[in-house]
Amino acid sequence: MLEKPITRLALDTPHDMFEKLKWEEARLVESWSVYDSFNFIVTAHHLYVDWLKSDSASADQIARKAELPQGAKDVFRAVIDVSNGSKHWKMTNKHSLEAQVIVKMERPLIGCWFAYFQNKPMAYFDFSGYSLSMAELSAFVVHYFEWILSGDGLPFPVELTANLDALRMPSTS
Image (cartoon, rainbow, N blue to C red; front, side, top):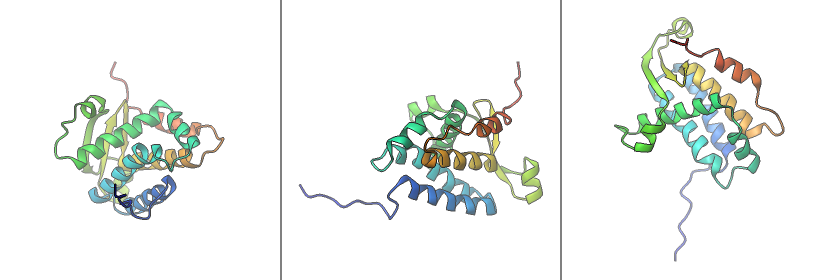
């Protein structure tokens, strides 16, 4: 059988893909545009789902991904929801629909003081009891990946959990 070549650009490790994600975040911060949001979300999705189980991910990285607190896992589940919803015209995959955590999503608008003072509309996401802007979501994602990829021997940063918990929506009960 003829062996086929690898059809991957020069991104060979999770760290390489993370560098791409940080490059996309830098573009995102400049605009908060739909295009830059899309690129960031899709790259984050694939880094989390595909690259952190690949042969190039270390056992420690895979273990740290599994050790994420529930809030961080919810953030990544929201990223997966938005990525799949943005890549596909209509979500029809039963598993994806059953696993969906996004309960509300606002298209780009000026919905917080940060967006107001920058005069840059951005998307907003409600999921798993949290309400985050694209700016907040992207910052958490990058920090979570920093720990997953480079947190050798370090416990999960408690300030990340505290910061995410501060963005919980008020309970209606």
